[in-house]
Image (cartoon, rainbow over all chains, first blue to last red; front, side):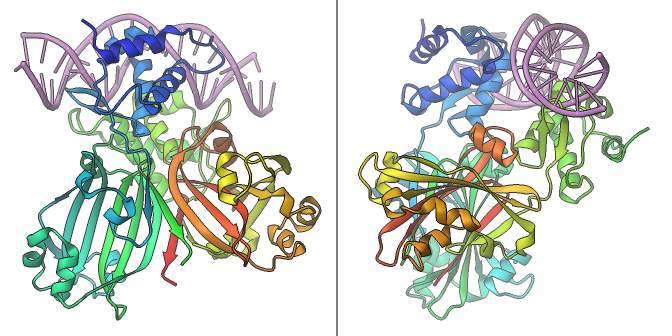
Length: 255
Length: 255
DNA sequence: CAGTGGTCTAGACCACATG
DNA sequence: ATGTGGTCTAGACCACTGG
C-alpha cells in the first residue's frame, strides 16, 4: 500500500544530501520538492503524505520537514489544509494579463476554463481612499461588490469593486441578470469606459484574502488598483485586485 | 545598562497576551513588532537585542521568537546579519514610480538622496529571452550592465541591463564618463528612445539579488522587465529590474 | 575570544476535518 | 476515534562576525 506521491518522495529522498555546511537540509529538501512541482512530477491537486510520514521518508524531524514545506507554501506551490492534508496547488504557471483589457480577454483563454463567483452586494460609506479615487464626498454612499475568479478551478484573483451609489440606482437589479458590471454600465447610459489609472504593488494576503485564494495566510500577493471612468472622464468604479504573487504577469504595451 | 530598543521591547511584552486558542503567540509578537516598526517606535537602522535576549523578554523560546522575527524579515521590516545582529530596515515604505519615466524622475525625489552603484561591465552571449526581446540571433554578443540604486542608503532596486554589442561599439568608453546609459545612446546616434513593452510580475529573491538588496534570501520581490527601442522601433535595451516587494508602487496613467 | 544568527532534534499538546 | 496540520518547548551544535 503506497500511493504515487509517497513513491515519488522516496525517489527524491534517495539521492544523498550534501554534507552539512553547504546547504541547509530543509533547503535541499525544498529544492527537490520545488523542481518536482515545476516539472510536473508533483501534479495538480495531488495529496502529499502526512508531515510525520514525509519527515520519516526524508530522514529528518517534523520541524525540519515543516520548514521545507513552508517555503513551498509561501511560493504558492503547495497548500496545506488543517485537519485534511497538504496538496499540490494546481498551478497556473503564469498568466499574461494585458493592461486595460477585460479580465477574460487579457488571459487569452477560452471562457469555459474561467469561473466567476460573486459575493453578496453590500452598501456602505466611502473610505477616504475610495472617496478620493471616485471624487466623492467623504462617507458618500457606495456599492461594494466582491468577486472571485477561478481558472481551471484554482482561484487566481479576488476583486473588490466600489461604485458610487448615486450614479447607479438600479445596480443590483442590472447586475443580477448576468453578473456583469458592463450590463450595469450600459443600463445607466454608459456604453463604454476607460481605465484612467492603474497601480501595481505588492503586499501580503490578509486572512480573508488568503482564504478566498486558498493560500497560506501572509503569503505575498500582487495588488492592482484601477479607476474606471465614463467617456466624460468621471470616475465610476474603483477596483482593488489581489493575485497570488506567482500567478500573474502584467504586460503593458506602448499604444 | 539597557539600550532604547530593549526598553521598547519590554514595553511591548508588558501587555498580557491573549490566551491560547485565539492567535498564535508568535503572531501576536510579530504583530506588536510590526506596529512598532510602522509607527516609527522602531526606527531606521536600530539594532535589536539578540534573539535569546528577546525570547526572554517576551517569555517564549528562541524558536518561537525566531518565527515572529522571520515574518518581519520576509515582509522587509527587519534584516538579520549573521554574526552581527538584527536591524530595523530603514524606511522602505512605498515609492510611487511612474511608468515610462526615468528612475529618478519617477521617484519625484531630490537627486541627493539617490545613489547609483554600477558593477563592472561584462560581455556575453544573448540568452534566448534576451535574443527574442532584442530581436537578435541566438548567442549574439551582448553587453551586460548591472546597477544598484540606493535611496537614503537603503537599496531599493537592482537592474540588469542587456544591450546588443553590435549596436554600441563604444559602450564602455561612453558609459564610463558619467555612468549614464543616455550618454551611450546619444553617442551612438540615438537622441531619444521609447519603452515598447513593460512587464510586471512577482518572484522570490535569488541569493545574489537578496545580498544586493540586503534582504533575507527568498524574500518576495517585484520584477519588472522593459524593452527600450530607438525611434525607428528597433530594440536597443532589455532591462530586468528587481524591487523589494513592499518598496515600490507602479503608477500607470492613461495617455 | 564571546556573541550572534542559522540549523536541527525529540517530544508534547492543541484544534480541526473526516469517516 | 483517528489522523491531520499548527503551535510550542528545551536543549544542542555550527558558522559567522566583531573587538
